[in-house]
Image (cartoon, rainbow, N blue to C red; front, side):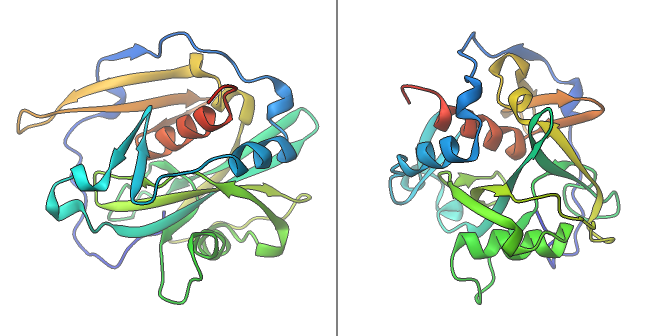
Length: 238
């Protein structure tokens, strides 16, 4: 997600890769026929998110159940851009610049906070993707939206799944994005590749989060959870 105007820097209080983990209980792999643009769009069209709800991992969470300070989160959106290659579909992801104040070096989808000029989450995701990786809106076919994901930092993020037409030339925004890369969609949506970590914070609280590793990239936190939610949305019988 795009860097905000805040000037304070994140202080990493634990190493996400070093925390204890367990595999996700055995689940069904998605059949290849569900990993096409038409199939994904058809499944997302069937989603009926509850107004005022967010989806975190395997369960919905009502905003009314959250602490008062988090009941008015900052609205944001990300694009989940899917590309088709000769060997199958892939997902475009970015590695954030190491110089950013927030989430430096982490793997994320292109996206960011909503602006007052945006006409909804789709507009936010498309605008931010154009700014961050040079992906033009006319090169994108929107497939649908996942339920909002509430981050621990107070953002309500709407993930927008999209099919990227052709083979566009992408350019990372120098200040925000260190790298743009692709990972196989089939791999990212295979539950067998996911772990659930548990970290103990300095205040004694526990934090659980998903991760999936591909090649040299460690994908964790909100990005891994949104990929997990895409799997759940596409899983037959959901």
